[in-house]
Length: 210
Image (tube, rainbow, N blue to C red; front, side, top):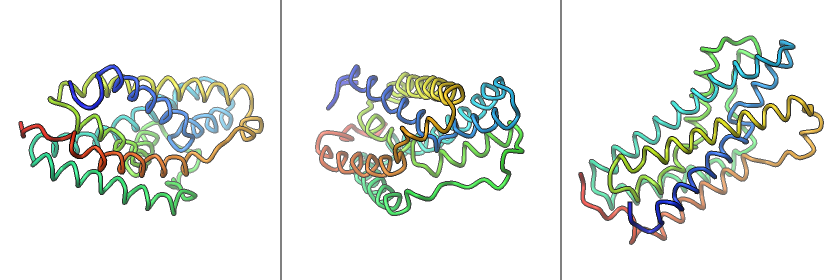
């Protein structure tokens, strides 16, 4: 995959996005910590992380698959501008609603199947899969995206596990002192990625339709 960015730089960016994705409390690991504390069992944390990560992967995968289908089956220029515009608009929408989160009525009395569903819905509405757009628009084939997606998801799972274990052992009270507004940062990041896609419109997404 030769384009605006080298493959190594894209791999590094996919890993960084995965790490940021994973440490965001809105992505579910804090739910896993609450469950472990609520049930007074550390192992519950590990049991919860797996379905939460599974839901994240499915939610991301759905958005990534939709963008990838459009990229390789529709006019590249139109797809590029449409995705860029959607990301900017969605980022602005989240910028004014960053304080609102996806709500789950089930509380802490949930099964692991419900955790997958909750995580899938949270990930889908959060727009995390949209940040894969630069890789999709840069790719010359679908197979170029597979290693990037695997690295992204594996780093996400690792960061979720490490941060949840750390918070579980240190205590949520201590964690709150270091908490930043991830949702506000996320909204700004979406807008920045969308604007970047517009700026790079002349250099990306120009390959023929496969």
